[in-house]
Structures are given as C-alpha cells and as structure tokens.
Image (cartoon, rainbow, N blue to C red; front, side, top):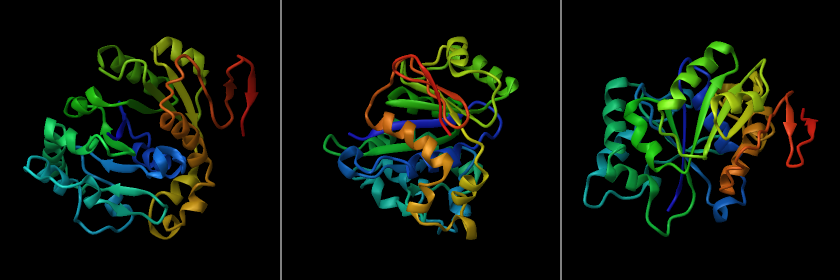
Length: 269
C-alpha cells in the first residue's frame, strides 16, 4: 500500500500548498523503489495548483472522489497531471462547494482505500488538506505521518498549541514545519507542544516563485530542486521516505541550529 502523508495548517496562510509542492519536488529519487510521490489537493476551500500552472479542469479531485464509490474506481494515477517542476499532482478545482463535497467523499472508507491503493502498490501520497478541520480527520486516522505547517510567530504557535491537545494526529509520527523567522528553538517548541519533530523552513521568495506557476514557475525539476525551500523539505522527505519518525530529535534548516544525533549543534546555511 502507498504511504500517506497529510499536510495542513491550523490557522492563517503559512504556505501549505507551496510546502507540499516543495516536499514532492525534494522527494528522494531512490525512495519507494523509484516510484515518485503524488500530491493530491484535498482542500475543502478549493485548489490552487490548477490556477497556478494553468491546468485543464479535468481530470481533478472531483473525478477521483466521484469514482471512489464505484465498483471499479480505477487508479488514482489516472487523474495525475505532470507539472513543469517535476511534481505529479491530482489538482482540485478552485471552488469551495464542489471541493468540500469531494473531500467528504474521499475521506470515506472507499475514498481512503483509493488513496492507499492495493497491497502491491508502492509510493507516497502527499495530501494537501489546507486547514486541519473535522472534514479531514478521517485522513489523519489512516496517515503514516502528519505535517503541520505554521509561521514562527507567537500567535501562530499559540493557535497550534490550542489545536494539538484535542487533535488525533498520528501518535509519535507528526512534524511541525515552522516557516520563516521564529524566536524560539526547536527543542523549546517541541517540548512545549509535545510534538516529536520540529523543522524550520527558510523564507524563500525565489523558491516559492519557482513553485508558483506562470513564467517564473515553469522551471525544470532540476532547477527547482536547487531552491533552499526544496532542499530544506527534501531533508524532511528523506526522513519520511525512510519511515523514520526520529522521535525526540529536532532538526532546524536555514539559519537555525541543528541538534545532531550526538547532541551537538551546528549551523546549516
């Protein structure tokens, strides 16, 4: 069966879709026997990728959700689009009402079975759920890992701290991805929020532009992989692909210190 990684946020707009694109672009080429991950937009508010990259309206998340309840739903891969940055994606249309219904269908037992595939299927599904609302909780119940994306300010982290105690994130298999400047250290955040892993992502305007579509986003996958944001999330991708929760170990990327396996600290730039 495929690995399922759910990525979402608690509040604000910290860049979940861009983070998932970067995570997919930075996925290790040798992972999953060479099977590239598939990004699936499952945001109740509607998708962004279709507009960013000028994709046709079909196939999309709506087609996958509609097929989920059929006796022979087909393969998730039948709805995949190839982006110029080297990412495979099942996009969602930019509409709240149809996407909310599609997400609810996909969150059902048949939909989740379609996402995970058959026993012999390999690879990883990176599920961009936007906000971590009640509608997407069924995905978290079967996820191999969850990534919560947030900005690094006190307000954003407070919202996360209020969400976590009552959440049903995968036990011991969750990561907090802090985007941009943050006055706190990874071990401080992890201890206060009781989350296994904290990573710091750089505020990378050029990297975000390379993953945003349009003239600046129509870059090859090799060029996209050289962006700091993709490099940072590529490190996390390597850990997820290896199915190593690294319980209690905290990494920082960008200008923050890193706690290595020996407990020493070094700077990564």
